[in-house]
Structures are given as structure tokens and as C-alpha cells.
Amino acid sequence: MSEASGTGRNAPTNPEATSEPQEWTNPRASAQAARAASARQISGRRRFVDPTTCERDYSEAEVEFMKAMQEYKQKSGRMFPTWSEVLEVLKSLGYEKTGPADIESPAPESPPNPSKPTPTA
Image 1 (cartoon, one colour):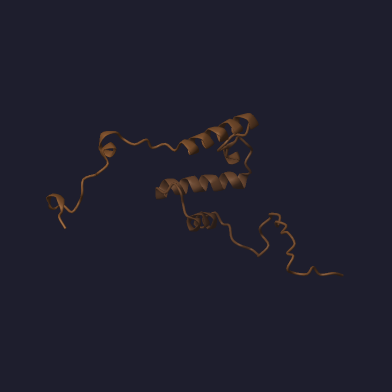
Image 2: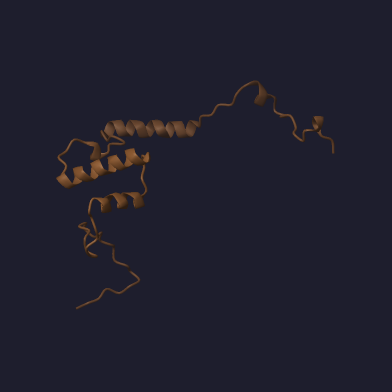
């Protein structure tokens, strides 16, 4: 076993690897991205539109929470607080859990499970 100059590394055997840089694009992925972009333009669908950033009238509680979060981020220097820190801010505003049914969101309807028989009256 012989090693070149005692480094344990061999020089590249492909002469193209040292003479010209390789192209870093994937033609298939580029074509797919171009098709997706044109489809978005045709459909009129916009990407990355966050409805929470649109102008709207916020309730007093929402404004209070947003201001408290902004103040927390400025004081702590953390732009992306953890959920524990968000809970800490909520508690500092006086919010507390009062019961198990406090969330007012509709329950998603699950499709019937064919392996379980449906109860009949």
C-alpha cells in the first residue's frame, strides 16, 4: 500500500473535476418549478399571504395580547418565543384556565371507521 505524499488522501482522478466547476442545477427540478410558477400565475393564487398581517379590526383583547408579546420579545431578545413563554405572557395578563371546554373551535368530523360497527337506535 503506497500513499501519495504521506497524507492519506489521493488526488482526484477525474480531470474534469479540477478544470471546470460542476453545474449545481437540476434540470428536472427547474422544469417542475417553472411549471408550478406558471400554474400559480394562471390560477391567480398567491403564495405566502398571511391573513393575520392584513389590515383588520382587532379586538381589545387581541391588541393587548399582541402588545404584551411584542414587549416580551423586546425585553427577552427572543424573536420566536416558545409556547411556554407565550403561556407565561398570557398568565401575566391574568388569563387562566377555567374549565375543560374553553376552546370554541368546531370539532373536525372524522370519517366513519369501517372496522367498527355503527351504533343503531
